[in-house]
Image (cartoon, rainbow, N blue to C red; front, side, top):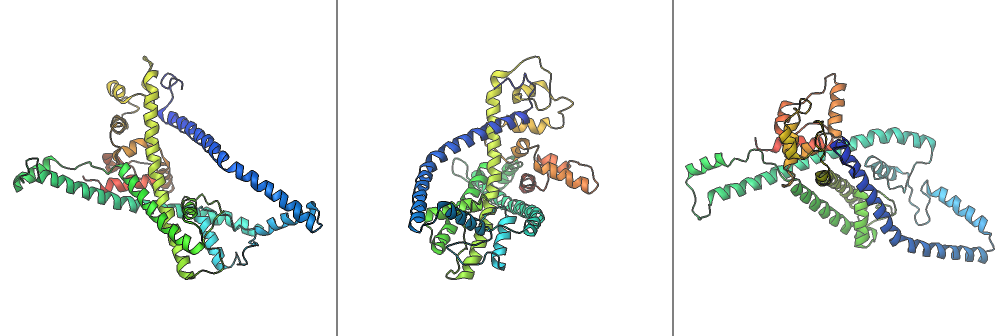
Amino acid sequence: MACCQCLGVGEDTGRFVLLAMAILLYLLGGAGVFSALEAPLELQVRERWAARLRSFSHSFNISQQDLSSFLRSYDEAKLVGIRVDSSRARWDFAGAFYFVGTVVSTIGFGMTTPATTAGKMFLIFYGLIGCAATILFFNLFLERVITVIAFVLKFCHERRHQLKVALPENGHRRPAADDHCSGRRDSLTGWKPSVYCVMVILGAAAILVSCCASAMYSAAEGWNYLDSLYFCFVAFSTIGFGDMVSSQRDFYDSQVAYRVGNFLFILTGVCCIYSLFNVISIVIKQVLNWLLRRLEAPCLCPGRGSRRNVVVPGHLRARRGPSIETDAVNESEGEGRRMSGEMISMRDFLAANKVNLAIMQKQLSEMANGHPPRTSASSCHNGFSGGVGALGIMNNRLAETSVD
């Protein structure tokens, strides 16, 4: 990598380039793995299908061209729900409700798609509003999940702190007055739950929901358990390949209960995975920050002037002193980045995500209401910023649950 500071590359730009390179390498590696795993089976299936086609054409004295034309007609019929293995209507009210659920959740299984021009045009406007509203719902769900996790972790931390104060190393309890003074000295002001703890809790919740849902799908759909887990991840992460789709058979035992359970599991699973993805993205960004610091160490070029967001180690930035241009952000930036070797706390979260979708949404919202973008004094004091995006909501909620 070229010398970042000598080229005047901003830290945000450096992080963006590094992430783009990492994603490209990730895609290349994934493509190689999947190609090695899936290509041999694809070749075998193609050979078997070609032999079956030749045999069928010869047995019934049908030209392969006519047979191929018939199969293409069947492919077109599948777009509107005509399938060999099922006679269930795809566009009755129940089927249409399932379809719009996959649209607004951005899962998009693809087993049912609009075939009429009017349906396609309506989908554009319907999906625009529906997807935006559902993403807002996911954000509000994330807000409440983070609130609960933060309160629980803070309660556990306070209990451990109280026990540590009440039972010193010699095993004798301190007097009550001493406890009060010690409590003042050892205040928990500024404590925030670790991002790692939040990530582990959300990951455990997502695994629990997926395992329970997989048990239900295995029993109801006749899938094996690993295929059910695969379906849960594809559906909950909103990838939605469509190779496996739940609730598509004509009849189920306890049909109403199964459809309700399917809806609730998909809703809960999507919310959990969405929240987990947001937290994992924070950890990935911290890894990128660490890589940038490792890359910038041999690239220092003396004699360059101070620039906003230029990649400079925290100790060198501290010796330079704040410039006029960066005076408003150096305090939070310096603290967050100098603590990079420690456990990542939610206080560092803003410094690592100072330019994000939440800030843009907040500014757009204030402009729409006729108010200029401004920064709340309390938000600045706590080191968190507002916003309606997932990252902004997490910032605000964790700031509110911190001990002042």
